Length: 87
Image (cartoon, rainbow, N blue to C red; front, side, top):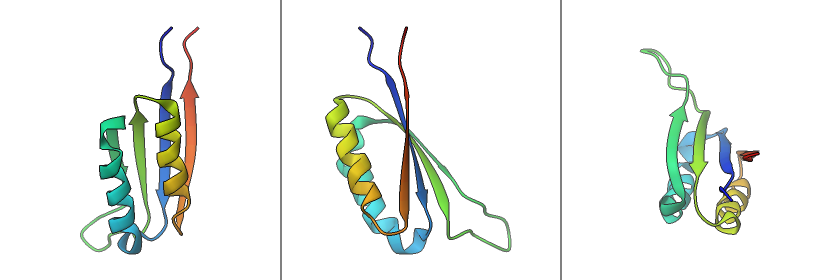
């Protein structure tokens, strides 16, 4: 049976304050992150303090969910999960 596709949306409301914590966790679980995409508003006048990170996860689901829990426990970080099964 094929593993489900697990995607996490990580909304960071204070990027400057949480960068070290978020980056540390992403590095710790780096072998379970297949794809990582960062989105935030930036132009020549402004760099938004908020950002969104999309993570495509691989490997043991319990390990992936441990990352989700640790990220969600950080102040100013919200994590949403999408799971796509295979029929």
